[in-house]
Amino acid sequence: MVIVSGIFSNAALAEKTDHWSIIHAGTLMADARKKATSAQSIIVKNGKIYDIRAGYISSSDLPNVKNANIIDLKDQFVMAGMIDSHTHVTGQMAPHSREQAVTTTNSEYALIGSVYARRILNAGFTTIRNVGGPREAVFALRNSIRKGQILGPRIVAGGLTISPLGGHGDNNGFRPDVFGKPHSGICNGADDCRRAVRDQIKYGADMIKYVATGGVLSKIATGTGQQFTDAEQAAIVQSAHAMGRKVAAHAHGKGGIDAALRAGVDSIEHGSFLDKGSIKLFKKTGAYLVPTLLAGATVVDIATNKPGFFMPEVAAKAKAVGPIMAHALYAAYKAGVKIAFGTDSGVSVHGINGQELVLMVKAGMRAKDVLISATVSAADLLDRTATIGTLEKGKSADIIAASGNPLKDISTLLHPTFVMVRGRVAVE
Image 1 (cartoon, rainbow, N blue to C red):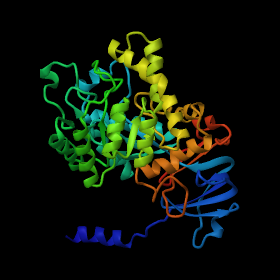
Image 2 (cartoon, rainbow, N blue to C red):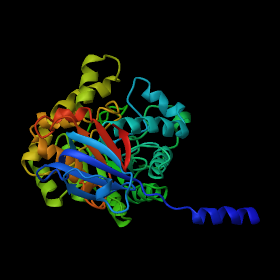
Image 3 (tube, rainbow, N blue to C red):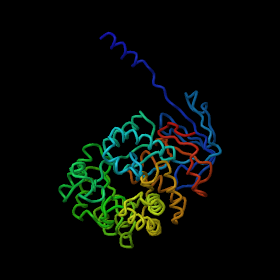
Image 4 (cartoon, rainbow, N blue to C red):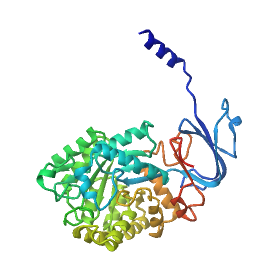
């Protein structure tokens, strides 16, 4: 008792040390919706933005601060850390991906995910939304990053993807004794789908992702049309919203896109075959489109140039869906649909997430609007506008820099020169 008491007494006397950094930004775009400014100082205290001041200040300009860490980015373009709204951080598509489903443990997935998460962070993405994967591994990774145990992007984590039996998201094609029992995200009928949603939330899901349609990478020839019924989709969305969770719907075919929008989803992932009617529903509901052009480009390249990589039914879907995704984005963008940045990283290689920026500009978006989609809009979709998306007093110090001006050449963001997340420097 005497020893323990002494330990606690010493701990109580220990003074908390504040950690200060001052970033000298040559060009600062604090909010992608507004004009950039020159010669600014971003003051960071304990992982948050304490203030932003004109000119280049030093420690002596701050009361009771003696040794702030000065970060010289006077010749750099500085902006808020980017947000990828569609990732699968615990895996990466490869010829052996199918085998991993029956050989990789959740512990291994978490360790693998920590490596991929760091690659994404180094690419300038300080927040990601993980929309499906082994939930125990994803939640452990999210929590470890949140506690500061490992360095990585903030993770807004979905649990298991909610999927219909035999549809996109189910483990199709295995022997019954290997995968005979569906995982807890598989459901049939409205009541069962409510159960599936609640199960994900019970174990820690920050959001819900479900598949409204078939998908390209399903190991089964069931197309890309609507798979869940309207009633099932309504039950999924209503159950999630009732428990304070936003909902993302994977949707390629028009029927599934429209059904998901009628059900009240917060975002449509991919949206490949949307049309004018779909766009009207987007505008009516205020849902976001998360375009994932990089995934489309990736699967088309593999299906075309790597024979045997995909099963025949997958290759056929890749060639049908991939080429039209940019056209869908442009149609939605021109009509005023809200766009949030997302790559489907894991289909593409983790760490090249910035290539989506280039593809979005090539599809017809203005660079400024692409940057808004990757900061302000994505933060809104993730319900995190109070902490991320812009650089403001009180928000998280999630800050990146590039050697050039991305408003003029967005490819300069492919290789960030500086990355800070929650006040910790990852790249310099």
